[in-house]
Amino acid sequence: MPKKTLSPTEIYKYLPKTNCKECGEENCMAFATKLVNREASLDKCSPLLTDAYKESYKALWEMLKPPVKEVALGSDGNVVKIGGKLVMYRHELTYVNPTAIAIDVSDDMPEDELIKRVKEIESFSYDYIGQKLKLDLIAVRSALNDAKAFGLVVKKVSSITNLPLILCSLDPNIIEAGLIEASSRRPLIYAATKDNWKEMAELSLMYKCPLAVFSPNDLKMLKSLVKTLKEYGVEDLVLDPGTFWNGLSETINNFTMIRRSACKEEDEFLGLPLIGVPATVWMEPDEIPEVTIWKEACLSSMLITRYADALIMHSFEGWSLLPLIILRQNLYTDPRKPVAVESGLKAFGSPNEASPVLATSNFALTYYTVASDIEAGKVNCYLIVVDTEGLSVESAIAGRKLTAEKVAEALKGSGVESKVNHKTLIIPGRASRISGEIEELTGWKVLVGPMDSSGIPKFLQEKWQKTT
Image (cartoon, rainbow, N blue to C red; front, top):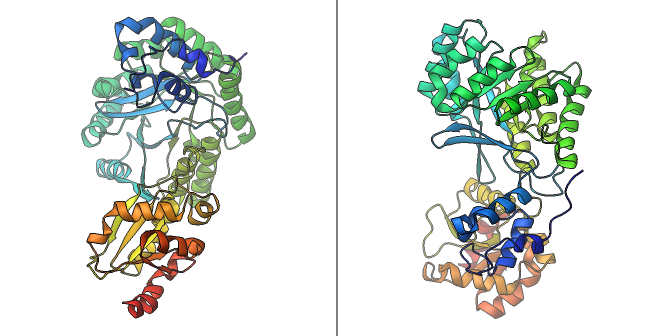
């Protein structure tokens, strides 16, 4: 059964109790509260890292360690961490370590095609509300079943990308050929089975690489293999219970039951990262390639929402990958905190002393929508981003997070008064109710702008020119 819920008092007993503030909190009790809420980590407490508190650190680590072990793939600053989950459901606490997505390459690809695909995987990027979304891994797959060919492809891939690797084959000899070329990269070995577990375990220990355990649709065997491998000395393990399109309900059920066993029952043999392989849909492709790509995208989305910590995919179409990386990003944001941008003064275009000054909230979606509309309209202006604790304008007004006082404070702190020769501020239409208060507090004239930021260019053309 799971441990009882921790309280800050229990954590506080093991802290130095010096109230040194090195962790950034006012006192040790505040830090203990942050630890319980998983808003801080033990390494933030400098005294706790000294020999004097070695035993306390161990005790706290045991109390706070996640039910799902964290496993690191890669090396030399190019590390992807998977697992480390603390809870089963997102509303309980923030998910950590977003699902790592790997795209496969194989040893039967022509060299020019291989190089092109690797470079495209590495350069894949999408800007989403201020965050750069990328792919994480490259899975090198043995298609020729030839150790020499596999080793050469792993060597080539290692020479042209720094992305962490997954080496895919059930033949230990082929895997070793790849490890010889990439052992310093600490790739994930995929995979150990009931037939090859000993040889794969020896490779994992020899080259100090994490190992995936594969037991399709047999959780009892999967758990048995994990227990055997742990007793053999392999600690960094990743679980693959099998991924099937024809058998989708069993696939989702297996992933769910494994994560439930880890989070609700604290089963140490199942408390490991999960890897899914949506690329299996290509084993029986549809006559229409787009249908197979759609199947892979659907399967991937279900696995992301059902606890997969890593995925191996084959298709590299933008229309299938973009929804997946956005879904992943949305799932792995903190449900307790809205996505926010840094407050302060932003300049668009080439503003001068006669340029308009606008204000908005620091909710990321609001800010980037406003910024996009300003840029689309080719408007030269200043934009004051008010700290509304990540709330949109309408919500911030209702919750008193966007007030005349906050606008006045942001206006003064921005230094915009020294940049323009006027004292006119344009506020969002949804903040019209505080326009009079802002004028009284700041001495600035307030213009109530459009309800929607798409109307900013037209508003400035009609109203700002008349005002100036």
